[in-house]
Amino acid sequence: MSDPAPVHVVGFGGTRSPGSTTVVALEHVLVTARSLGATSELFDAGTLDIPMYDWGAKPTPEIERLARTFHAADALVWASPLYHGTVSGLFKNAVDWLEVLADASPPYLTDKPVGLIGVAGGAQALQAITSMEQIVRSLRGWAVPLVVPINRASDAFDRSAASVRDLRVAGQLDALAREVVRAGRMFRGARS
View 1 (cartoon, rainbow, N blue to C red):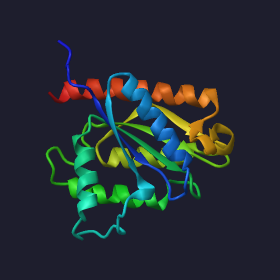
View 2 (cartoon, rainbow, N blue to C red):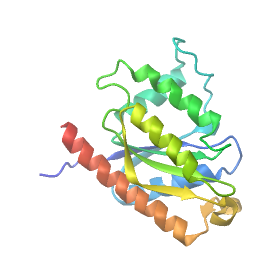
View 3 (cartoon, one colour):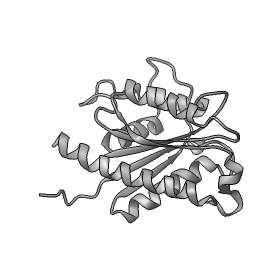
View 4 (cartoon, helix red, strand yellow):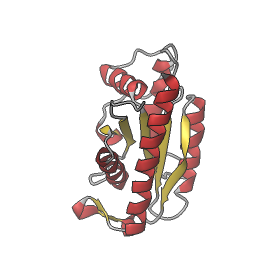
């Protein structure tokens, strides 16, 4: 018997730059996920007001909302620009606050499938994905096997239209959406 409730996919990432190509990539995945019957929500890291992580500090209401939403999601999609060989500080700081889920039941992101997107101005976008995979594992989540490293972002995106220009990249993002929705259904069934 299939579960009639739609899979809820939460996207997270971005930069403080207007027209962030990282957010454009996330939005593309979430639109495709909705076309597959999922519901979605986007947290643009560049618009969040999150203090620097300090172990033991009291989380702000915005941090609590982000953590609760991540914990309740059926699946996640994370996207980070490549900064000096890894994820951005903005991205890493936000996920460090997921420590507030240590005492949740189940803790952290246990059994959450997470789709990963890395965006680079040049090459090496896969390095951001490699960093995110380590973070997902440490939070007890599952990185979906298909990842989308996007190199030369200025060629792949049309910033003025806030859209994906490269059809190959668009196809990869669509495929990631399909994988995330499928994994969300599978993992939700396993948790039932």
